[in-house]
Each structure stands twice: as C-alpha cells, then as structure tokens.
Length: 531
Image (cartoon, rainbow, N blue to C red; front, top):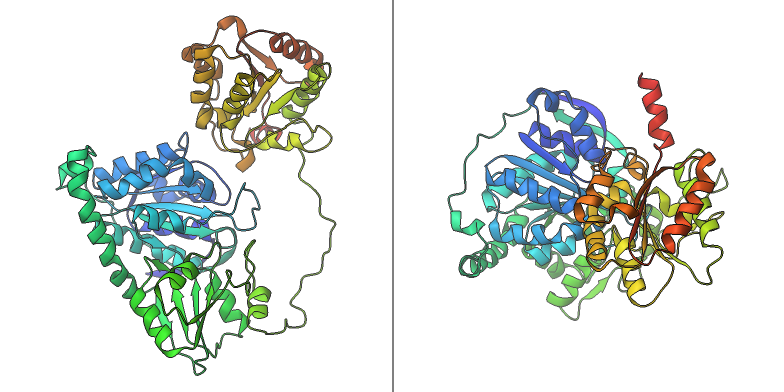
C-alpha cells in the first residue's frame, strides 16, 4: 500500500530509512541535517521498534557507532552537516577499507550560500576520496526512495554509501509517495571477511586492491542506476549534465521541455558510459551542479579535450552560492520571466542573541573584565554565543571550527599572548573541546576557558547536550585544578560577581575554567509550556 504525504527532504530520507528496515540512527545536530534524527525520534514506528535514535557526542562517534551496527548486520544511518563530515573523516574514509555488512548510509547535508556554515565545501569530493558510492537526490521523492536503494547498494557492494543533501532540498517540502508498512529489521549476522575489519597493515594491504577494483566497477552500476538517465533532445548543439537539485532548475528554466539532451546525475562514481554517449552526439556540454564543479572537473580531465565544457569554471554559472532558476536561465541566454523575482518585503535583520539569553550576561561581564588590559584576545567557537562577535558586544576575535577556541587560546598563550581567553558552549565542549582542554591542563597553560552552559544544543533548536550536569566533573576528571574550576549562574544580578571572577582567573598564571550556567531561554519556554 502507498500513501502521499508532505515532507521535508530531511524527513523524506528519514522515513525512507525507517520503512527500509532501519535499526539505528546516529547524528550530531547541524543545519541543514538536524531534522533527520529528530524525525526518527518522533516517528511512531521507530518508537514501537525501539530504533536507536540518540544524539551522539560528535560526528566521528556517530559514524563509528553506525559502523558498529553495520558490523552486526543491521541497517544504520549517520547524519551530519557538511563540515561535520570533516570531523568524521577518519572513520568515514577507513569504512571503505572495512566495508559494510548491514546497509550503512552516511548523510552529509551541504550548505551552499553558507546560510549557517563556515564554508561551502562539497561532500561529493569525500566520496571519490574514500572510493565510496555517492547518492544525490534531485527532490524529496528521490530522498525517500534512495534510503532503501542506498541500503541495498551498500549491502550488495559491501561498502558504506554517502548520501548528499543540500539546504534547499533538506528544508523544503513536497508531496512524497511512501510505503504504509515498514519492512522488518535485519537479524544480527556478522561479516564473512573477518580480517577486513581489522585494519592492521597486513590486512589492509590485501583489502586495498579489492577496494580499488570494487570502486572501478561501481561506474557501471551508476550507468544502470534508476536515478541516472539520459534524456534525448532535438537540439544537439549543447548537451546538459545536471546533478541533484540542479536538474530541477534546468527543467524549470525550460518550462519542463528542455530542447537539449540532458544527462541527469544522481549516483556516483560518474557513469562514464552515459557521459561518453552524450559527448559523442553534442557539440558542447553544459554542466549544471549545486556546489563545487565536481563533474565539470571530471569532464575536463577525461573527455574530448577539444569539446567545449561549460559551467562554473567557464564563468557561465556562478562559482559561489546556491544556483537557482534565474542563474540557469542566464547561462542559456534565457530572459527571466515576468513575476519570477520575489520582492523584498521586509528589511533584513542580522541575527542576535535572544533577550534573556545567559550568553549576554557573560559577554557584558567579560568585556568589563578585559577593559583594563592593553590587548586582550578572545577565541570563540561554534554556537549561539558566536553572535557575541556582533554588536553590541564585539567580544570575539576568532571563530574557526568546533572546539578550536580552547586550542587556539592555548596556542596564542604559547606565543606569549595575555590575556588569552576561550569561550565555548556546553555541547561544543563535549563535541571537541575536551581534548584541547586536556592539552592545556597537561601544560597548565595560562589561559581562561569559559564554558557558557545553556543546558542544551541551542543553535540547532534545543537538542540534548551530552555534558548537561557533568561539566565540572568532566573538567576535574581531565585533571583541572579544583581551585581554579568555578561554576556561576549567568544572571544579570551576577554580572559584577562574574566580572570579578573573570578578572581574578585571568590574572592566574595557569589554567582556569569558569562554567557559567543559565538555561537557554527558548528551551526554558518550551519546558514551561509542557508542564
């Protein structure tokens, strides 16, 4: 039986995975991927089956946990945003060497235009780098269908599968035709090739040639994929290769009737046989892809050198930001249609810390405490408190990646910087700040670490934070001096007390940790409503 429901792209994939026999979902929250695990957590079938759906400490642990479930023969997913795949790169790349037993899909949700990210990196590069198959849905229906297909591809190839989403697909809704019944979960069964899962050199040297051969065969699998197809067109002057969501932009640009042959790409490695067929009959090729010019670079390296390859590298399409129908029309010399542009109805407002947010009081006290020093430096991190960089606080000097505040503050102190202050949130601290703190503890680095604890992962909507109620114990367990680990409530009435504490610990000639605690105002409101 089938039914049609309205779903986000993230939700469509999550439901597809549940209906395909999912046993475990692992993730760390990050826009635009967060809704995948949230959907699993709320789904009635997932609750009834007790499908694992707890947040992981970070993306690396999520992939490793999912890989462990795959080892036992069950189907699992690990979901994250694109920069989270950097954190998970070690197990992700090595999972190509171990292979998969139960179906394993790693989901990376890319963020073109950097709506909520540090960069625009394209996760498809990771697929080729690790020599793993990649799926890239064009719409919500494909996101749903690719869950079951991805598990089957993983189990048939013996490899994990990378599924790439993008913001516009993850966070838009469409009607999706779904199954009304979920297939049973897989029974526990273990890998036949046991040595393959022990990546000692003696085993890896045997495994690597097998991986290369398997990956080489996957190009033909892509050529036969139901998601890759070559669509004929009468005008052979241009052939179009369109991948993922960009395929929809091409179709819309031509009103659904493209006059040129189109090769729709949704599965990688690239189907060279289909590309060669398109190239043989067309004078030039236009590549339309969301993100970086992955396909275009491939064509320029492998296919007819004299053939005109047009796309982002040629300047016909914008190299940065998201594509849209207008940018595709412009690439083909088609004028925008009247009424296409959306008028600006409101004045843009920069993001700001919520009124009543405890981070505000931390920054007020910190700015006051640092005002008497000639060149204080504050190293920030990824979270709501990153907004302390903006006016009226202007309190942060650097923001790079998850956990970098503590390690950069330590490096600056090693260079002679004083004061050197790190500010990090509770969720980010347990994600990747603890190891940096251990470095600072081992050297008793003269830095002040402020853990601004709002009792949740606030930036992505209030998911559970792994360190709630345990931050002081974690710091002491790592070896921090109890005399210089302090906890204080970040309330307006305590700003003066916080300022005094900050100044005293900044003047301490070793490591200090200050944990400022106040529940996120947004989660606090939700907790009041549910009582």
